[in-house]
Image (cartoon, rainbow, N blue to C red; front, side):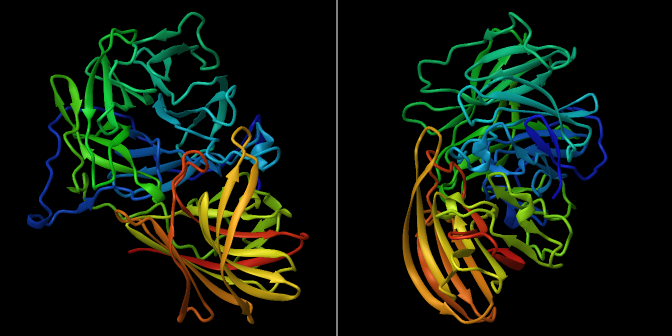
Amino acid sequence: MKTKTIPALLLLAALSLPMMATETVKKPMGKIVNHEASQTAMFSNPVIWSDVPDMDLIRVGSDYYMVSTTMHLMPGGPIMHSRDLVNWQTVGYIFDKLTDSPKYNMEQGTVYGRGQWATSLKYHKGRFYALFAPNDNPGGETYIMTAKKAEGPWTLVSRLPHFHDATLFFDDDDRAYVFYATGEMVELSSDLKQVVEGSHRQLFQRDSEEKGLLEGSRVIKHDGRYYLQMISWTNGHPRREVVYRAKDIQGPYTKRVMLETEFGGFGGVGQGTIVDTPDGRWFALIFQDRGGVGRVPTLSPVRWVDGWPKVDYVPATMEVPFAGNKKTSIVNSDEFNKPTLSLDWQWNHNPVDNAWSLTERRGWLRLHTAAVVPNIFLARNTLTTRMMGPQSEGIIRMDVSKMQDGDVAGFCAFQNDAALLSVVKEKGKKYIVASTDSVEMEPKDLHVLADHRHEVYRKVLSQNIVYLKVSADFRLHKDVASLAYSLDGKHWTTVLSGFKLVFDYRRFFMGTRFGIYNYATRQLGGQVDIDWFHFKVK
């Protein structure tokens, strides 16, 4: 993949969809429908049972666009599109690589759990804008990017001081603001390139009942009022979504709780935003922590009460807001028969571009070894895609005929505590090896200090084609993975089951992913070819 470089970012070229102007018409919200009594299209929450945290959501005409956090994965800043708020697909990325720090290349440390966080997405006067602050160091900067189409290409507008969990907001008079941290705000110059001197405001102080930061700022304007939505925590209550309202952008602001509920046995739901439909209904897209699979979006109806948005609860089942749309997903099977990589895939840290190919062997993904490293956590060009609940399964078909001694290639449940199903070549022989690998990192620069590895299975592999399967179960009280291999794609040998998948904010801070990898422990020069990746949700 060839890319163009602008300061600190390599940007991704994109697809094309027609844009429409935003309009807001106030009508009553849609009703929740009994699935047993209705033939209408239904969906179950979470609306995306996969790791899509820190979402921002906008409507442009009848199209909905969402952005999420993917931290140390590249390309980053995924843009997803939907026509009905239920069926989503990835249509582009804000950037291909981040290059401000060598850590993005796994040099002088790593950026596991850091990188791109909590991006804000806006549409203003025919252009899309994204604001995000890479969390790779405390003194980092905030980027503002822009594009004519949500799919890209995106270009850099400015670099500003670091704004934590910020949102960009354009007022009716075209003045631009950034809301961030716990109720802080600054105004930006008309070209978005600097903070207006003297514009900083502390709009409110958190209540005594709140503990820690209020985070995840998202701002809308409705009926002449400003609404700042944030996640909050209180003692003795689940996480919740609160909203601060004001008639003037400078305040004063008053607070109400918009949503405080547990859902599905997984705890509280908080952090997200609300959006209207062309026919005047309102919906909330707010995520919930769900252990090993990550942080998953839920979709709920919103009702307005005395000028305040209110989400009463998260429905287990609900009518799709707009019927008749094609079912789409952000995770799909891939035959690797196109000249460009599907947008479902992301690399772990910046990729080494000349160490992978979709054209050297047509119809196959070729992974050359890209670095000599001791473990998967330092391997370059590990290719990942999300897992999904309630249960999901991925299978790859791999040709290992060109591996060299010391090479390790395979398929895994990629996480800070990972389950690996590898082909290892040692002294001219190949082996099927299953292992559990847990990373230990130094906290400041996230140097990988150790891979606590436990080998659970080893057997000689006497052929060059092998099928590898990774399965995961994210139902309540499960969060487990299993590994199996086959020599013919029909008869399977399970080599690991019940492996616990752990979401750890101190390490990866990310849901578990499928990972395809090939790394060298002795010398470069080896390669493997992947025929296909087959995925299904169970």
